[in-house]
Image (cartoon, rainbow, N blue to C red; front, top):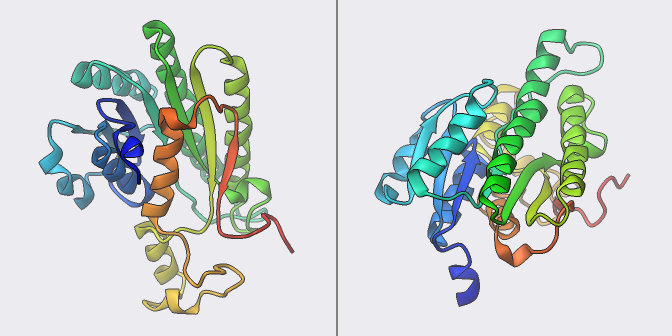
Length: 260
């Protein structure tokens, strides 16, 4: 990265949800490396939080469930109390439990929608409210999925939630045009996270599942790494991506999304 890029986030403060593993942890790491302050939020204190202990002045971890009604105001309030400013949000927390058209229960459906769509909206609402009150520019990045365009048969509710998130991104961006508050979305493809590794092993993939990925699914030979996605997240959070708002960017290695 050039010197200007390396300094682009110096002193800015961001919230990252789902921050103790995968894309969230990689995003926290990259933000800190670029000089930003970060409030990481997750519902479990995985080892990733301990890895960031040496960045105590720049990083603060909040153990919280983003689906709780009180969480958004608490998260935003703590960010302001800790860092004295709020410059952006990476709406990353999410989950993709399996369930298709014939076997998705009402309970599973509600759980998926609550975490992947409802929680991002109300956290965005709290961040936007603070940004409007502060009268300062702010950048929100929603972490979506290429499943938003149709989705795997076994991910019905998840695909619907990510499709809703995409519409939410555009609706909020349109509503806030001219305020200095930008909202964009990254529709991320297949990524080698801890959760994906656990899923593949639990569904019969074995410890060597990465060696059997089809070139159709990973043209370069390997799927995305969290650190690669984090680079995109940090760019869209940063002033370098201004003035773009309401955009949906596919972070995937397919030349054409949705190809047969």
